Image (cartoon, rainbow, N blue to C red; front, top):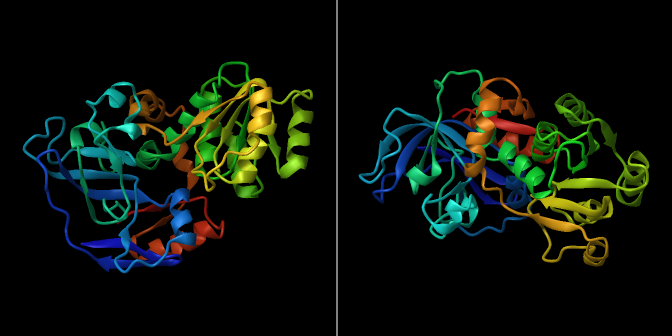
Length: 344
C-alpha cells in the first residue's frame, strides 16, 4: 500500500510499504477514508534525525473496518470507525478511570514501532478499546468534524477540563492552531463568559471569533500578559488552555492566570522543565493536563457534532490526497494552512 513516510526533518515521502495485517486476535484492519496532519507532526518535521528506515506518519483517522481479529467483539467488517491517536485496551485500571493515554497495554500511532494512518490502511491494536463505531455513512458531510474526535477536538476539550472551565468564568486560550481553536469551542461549550484567544494569524483569529472568542490578544511576552490583565480588570483569567508547548507559551499561561486559577496543558512540551514554578506556587495556580484521553470524550462530544451545535471540522482549510501530503506538511509548517485533511 501507499503511505506517508518521514525519513528526517523536512523529508516526507509517499512510498509503497507492506500492507498491514492482523498479527494479534485483538487487531482490526481499517481502510482509511479520512486522515490529517497534526500540529504535533511538525515537531519531528523540524527535528527528526535520519535513522535509515523512516516512520509511517499519522495518528488521526476515520475509516472502514476491512477485517477483525478473532477476539474483536465491538465491531465488524464494513463499520465506519474513528481512530483516536492512542490505542488502549479499554479494560485496565486507567482506562476505567477515563485515562486511556495511560493504558498499561496501550501506545501511540505514527511512530517507529506502530505505523500511522496517513496511509491507505492501518492496523489498529486493541481494537475493541480503541475504535469507536460512528452512526453515519462514509459520505456524510459531518465527517471532517467527526475526524476531529480522533485528536484536536478531544484535546481542546481536555485542556478546558484540566483548566476547570465552568459557566461564568474568564478563559484564555494560548495558541491559535487547530487545538487552540477547538479549545475555544470547548470553552464556549462549557459556559465560559469571556474567552481570550492569544494568536497572531488573521485567518485563525477570524475563525476563533466565529467559534466564540470574545477578545483577541496578538502581543507576546510581557505585553501579552499586560493586555490580558487589562481585559480582566487587572486580575487575570480563571482558566488558561495552553495549546502550544513552548517555554514562552507555558510562561505566559501561568502569568495570565489569576490566583487560585488553573492551567490546562495540552501542547506537547518541548522542554524538560516547566517555567514559572514559583509564581504558580505562590499564586496557588493548578497546572495539569497532558496527552488527551480523547477516547473517553467521544460519547460526550459526538451528539453536539451530529446535531450541529459545534463545527470543529472548520479547522480544516486544505484537502489533499496522499500525493499532496508532503506539501501539506510544508503548508502547515509555514502557517499557510491551519490543518490539512488527507483523503487517501
